Image 1 (cartoon, rainbow, N blue to C red):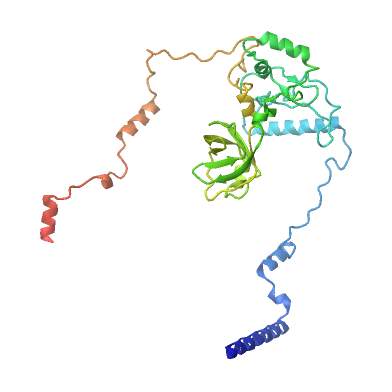
Image 2 (cartoon, rainbow, N blue to C red):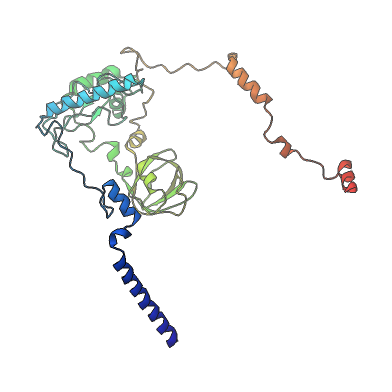
Amino acid sequence: GDLGRVGIRSKLRVNVALQSAIEALFPAETRVAPAVRQRALRGEPLDGRPALRLARPARGGGEELTAEEREARRKEREAERVQALLAAGKDVYAGERDNAGMPDISHLCDGKGRPLKHNRSCHVCTQGNASWRGGFFQPLGCSKCEKIYCPRCIGNIQGKPYAEHKEEIDQFIEEHKLSYECVCCENKCACQAKEFEPLEVISSSADKCAVLRVSAKHPFKPGDKVRVTGHHGSCRDDELKKGEWAVKQSLSPTSFSIELDLRKGGGKGGKVEMVKLQKHKRWGWAGATGFGIQKDAPAGKKYCPPAKRPSGAKDAPPSKRQAAAGKSKVEAKPAKAHLTKQWPQSSPARGRARAGA
């Protein structure tokens, strides 16, 4: 044992001596790592830190712009972007996106100290002038915040469908267009309901669908859209936090599954919450998509759902393409038919072959 330890020590001394001799014979510049040499050629810091970037100069050469000037420049850039998309053949809404007839809230400021202005889309159904879902008529803006509400959602909040009480709701909007205080400012909105408050995620497990276990009884039903934030520990945390996921099944009062496969293992932490639009749908405020008045219909014409097909009506004759597709499907042969054919276990041919062998 002592001889072994002496041998190891002597080898270590020899290695140290050889290393010192190599360092003396070959300068450090000749032993630069390839990665460091590549950084030097690209002009990057040799230790791998990100290169220092100078701050971008202020727009407009550092000149001070008023709120009106900034808004005018924003509209110019937006118009240029829309024209570029139209020139590229895109189907883009080119009309005015801002809403007129809104109360003045310029004395209010947002989180960055800028004058507040009203949103372009309805707080409940997210529909605006550029939306494709039905007609968007004169909305009602709040006098204490930036939220606006379309006539259809105003009618749903009041329990009066807009298609049936159009004149009454239009008169209400006209009378309150400069003094309306919205349900959010009164703490009565569906997205402020206690039953829809975010729930803490205790743990998650991997399955064909991710299973989330929460700290209290959840209100989710199959088909509800939920958003997860702050979750960690699973293989797909980034994807989980980015999107909105549909609830697939309610497994228990405190657990449910969503349409996402976590692959391996699970995680914990974070919160899960129903998306805002889904909360309004639960309260019956945003269930008017496809109802009300058509987008291209003149004012006063009610929406008429498509007529149902009579039970005794005959089907229209198929087109040439449909007929060709149906014929090809009928005449198509099953894939790998020679592999699926079952041969008898014993046959005269097989017996003769064995006898000849």
